[in-house]
Structures are given as C-alpha cells and as structure tokens.
Image (spheres, rainbow over the protein chains, first blue to last red):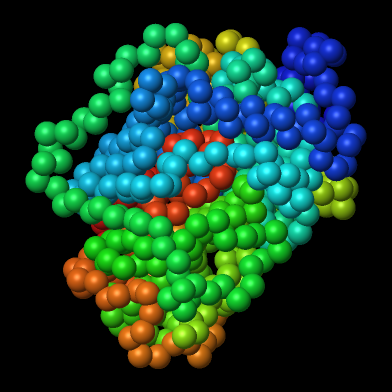
Length: 330
Length: 177
C-alpha cells in the first residue's frame, strides 16, 4: 500500500494524514466492533442528517451525475434525486413511498407500501448477521469531496456476495463514497459525492418535482404492493445461498402486470429479489438468461407457466442459486 | 491489462499479481505513461491535487474533444475540490474502460428449464396484460424490477436514495427501445 501512494500525496504526505488519525485496527483480519459501530453511524447519518449535494455513479464506462437533497422534517425524511446528465429524471422518496418521474417514457411510477419502510433500518441483529458474512474492518483516513473520511472495508467471507469499501465523514458519519468489488477484487461500481453540504439552510423548494405540471398527462404505474404469504400459495425457495434469509414477501403490480409475487432475501447488506409472474404477461420471445449492470445481476428462468426473475446486488452465482431454488408445490 | 493497472494504482491488486505487473511496468513504456495518468486521476478523485495542478488538469480536459466531460463547466460554481473530483471520475471513465453497453448481453441457456408448476394454480393471478412488457432482457422491463428491488437493499439503507441512480440512469436506453 505504502509504495503505491500517488506521487502528489507522497509529496504532500505530511499534510495528508496526521499520525494520530491513523487507524489502529487495520491489522485486525476479522471484524472489529468499532468498524461495526461505523456502519451504524453511517446508517444513522443517512437518516438523521439534512444534506444536499452532487454525486457521481460510475459503472464500467458509464458515468451519471445526480443531485440529491435530503431534508429531515417533523413528518419524517423527504428526499429528491435528480439526474443531471441528459433528460432529467427524478425520484422523490418520503417515509412510505417512492415516486419516479421518467419523462422519456412519460411515466410516473409510484411504489407505496403499507407496513414496509422505504428507509430500511439496520438493526443490531442485522449488524451481527453482517459480521457473519463479511470481515469488517476500518481502513485509513482518506479525503473525499473535501471531507476527511474513515474508510470501512467489508470483505466477503465467501463467493456468494461482493466486497465493499466505504468512505464516511469523520465528523458526521455521512457516507461520501462507496465502491463495490467482485471476487477478483475488481471494481464493479462506485458512488462518490463531488459536492456536499451537510446541515445549514437547505432550500425546501429543492424537494419539489419539476414535473408537477407536465406529468399530469403521463401514465401512472402504482405498485399497489401488499404483504402476503407466498409459501401458503405454494411458492417456496428450496434453499437460500449461505448467509441469506427471506425478509419479506409481497404481491405487487409490476410494469402493468398485477399479482406479481415478490420475495426478498438479504444477508444483512446485499438484497436479492425474486419476482414471480405469469408467463402470459411476457412476450413469447422470453428466454432464460443472465444480464448484469455494475453490481446488479438479473437472472430469469421459466417455472411452468410462470417466469421467475431474480435481481440482486450479488454475484451471478448467488442470483442463479436463488432462481434455481424457486419451486412451486401445491 | 489497463484495468489491472488501475487496480494496482488503487492498491487493490492481489499480492500475486502485484509482482507481475510491476515487472511489466518496468519494461512497457506505454504502460508507464498510463501509470502516471492513473495516478493523476487518482489524486484528482481523492481531492489531493493542489489548486494549481487542478487548474492545469481542468484546462487540459477542457481542450480535449471529449463527450464524457460536458459537465466540467457546470462544476465551476462549486468550491474548488468539486472540480478535480468530477473531472477525475469522467476522465477515469475515458481512460480506463473500453466501450460496453450498460447492460451486458444475456447469456442464453445459462439456466435449465425446470419442471415447475403446471396449470393456473398459484398465488400469482394473471393480471391485465400489459402492453409494455417485453422479453426478459429488455431494459424497460429490467428497470421495473430494479425499482421494485431497491427499497429492500440494505446498502440502500446506508447510501440512501443515491442507489436509485443506477436504475434511473438507464431510462434513456429503456425508452429508446
């Protein structure tokens, strides 16, 4: 590590990382509790802080710049994300719903879920679970977007999940950068803030959609998601990949098709979604296979008169494992 | 090779590969050039560049006939550190990766057709047929799955709504189909 420091940082070395900020836990191979506490801190910061900023999402050759504004109000947090490249697309998230404005297809997508939090919590027991599936440790202190950040490294303990590197602001715990790595330790994607204002006065107008007038004529797709028990109806996942367990089961409308089954599995960090829908809602050209984008893998296969689609920020092996384990028994 | 080099610069290469690539770096002039560039980009990404270096990099980028950095001017109004970061990330994309579609092509027949349910029994009742549904790999359809999936991602608990960028980023491609 030491010898690979960029030239400029070697020259500026003494000013960059003050000795007392050097992490003491770097040598620990296994999870140390202070690293776990950092994860908790990052989560709390995402929820409790008001902030506005610009970040980039990079995946392979693709780079997308977006603006995000997150304001915590008495009624709960409100968030708006707007892409800054190309046609502006927007997502507005409140406590219990997510609304997407997609002008290119003139569609408004509403995902409202009674009993399901749109801001999933990282609970202490989930943190323990996380530590069972990843070696979690603190890295160095590095600077991102002008903020000194603690690096947190999550190394997967097997090949069923990806590795992560997180950069969190030393003062607030706010996550400023995140990279995901595959099993060859090659980067799959990254998020990084290039500009961020934490706290202070943030104009509430930034939470309003620019499409309120234009979207009146757009097609509205409501997910109408409700909790259900798919096992009762005969759909089960024979076995989950190691470390993953089912966290919720829903019935929803997806892309205009109602009654789509949705099972969610999680290992404490990565989630895998299973969608079950009637084959007749798809075109006959459907064929089984895998597609990927950054850290997301999608695998589809027919099961009788149904199509099973598995989506997850997990390696192809895990996604395929789940898809192959879906069965219907009645 | 260049991706490996990038990993080496980032200190993310495994120790086995490490020696090999250092060796190649010693003999390959072109690679050494790339090595220097990556470090510059890396510094920009991490915000280590001093303002004077930043100005030079940004000036150079401005002169380049690239399509991936149209936002450079836009970042001017932000404080100085925003610029190297934005320019740096765009430059990384330019330098390191070769062109590839957002979604990798499906690998057909990776799965086997399982002996599954027959008949119409099941919880999943056939809904109104959608005019918009397409074959599995159609970006518009995949986007539907992505948007439905995101709220459950615990990494989205930490990264918040930012995670959604990866689904909305695809919308232009989806709509174009």
